[in-house]
Amino acid sequence: MAEIDFPAEIRALRATYDSIEAVTDVETIRKDIAELSEQAGVPDLWDDPAAAQQITSKLSHRQSDLERLEKLEARIDDLEVLVELGQGEDDADSMTEAANELAALKKALAQLEVVTLLSGEYDEREAVVTIRAGAGGVDAADFAEMLMRLYLRWAERHGYATSVLDTSYAEEAGLKSATFEVKAPYAFGTLSVEAGTHRLVRISPFDNQGRRQTSFAAVEVIPLIEQTDSIDIPDNEIKVDVFRSSGPGGQSVNTTDSAVRLTHLPTGIVVSMQNEKSQIQNRAAALRVLQSRLLLLKKEQQNAEKKALAGDVKASWGDQMRSYVLNPYQMVKDLRTEHEVGNTSAVFDGEIDDFIDAGIRWRANTRNAAE
Image (cartoon, rainbow, N blue to C red; front, side, top):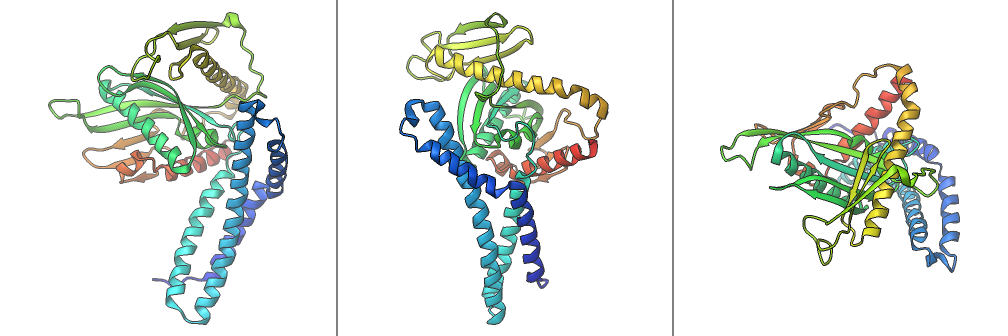
């Protein structure tokens, strides 16, 4: 093993940390924590449960952001001490431990550095993810369900709360579509690089002749609407349909007309919700998602002129942004970033951080090139 120049490596770690700290603005984080702590200490905080939940959630995440930064700085300090002791006592075990910690710190800082690239207008928002089965029949529906599990497992691994808003089950297996929220700061900025068409190649478990099948599923990611957003929808622009929920359900879910479908007449956008117990709850959830989609549409329209002036950017977000191949070989490959892995089981179990990090860096580089 080549000898490691620890002083140079530690200087590089500190330089990376300093740049992250500058972009992150630690003083602003501390100020936010102080303000949110004051709001959380108000006696009548829980008179408005929704607002209280938002305040406590933001406080928790800001505290986690500060703790993560402070722990990384402390680990760099500890590494420097460990190297000094190991070299002073010629302790091989300590130097091996230092080498392992150096590698771990490089990875942790690289992951944190990616977060600094999330500077879009809505990047810090929570996310609403919709997955739809595409071409490929029952295999596509099954693939849609596999992708839903993938993202829910990814969120679980990070400790992010999720809430399934709507599931439309296919007749034989899998899902026609599903919509769920990921409730974490920067969930939209992080997951928005997953938007696009995903392709699965495998021996179909639904084909009696054991033939290879290619199927597709679309992933849509939108920012969650907030109370400060001014997206007013006149009642005469919305068509409301109520119907009985389908698929697995508990008491009164499948026995009353509790499911709601909203159609925005000017744009044709349709949102369905059926996972809440009451029609009122489903309507509120559907309206929130509809507002989120209209918010994103408004932003896209505002940027249309800029995109036209910028021209066609190479490596655009086209179809088949990622391929999942299970036969004749095992590989998941992102067609934009060229990042690929051979452990397909791990990917379908939610281990996609490397894909997301590569996607965020690719998007930042693409934007910089266009500008």
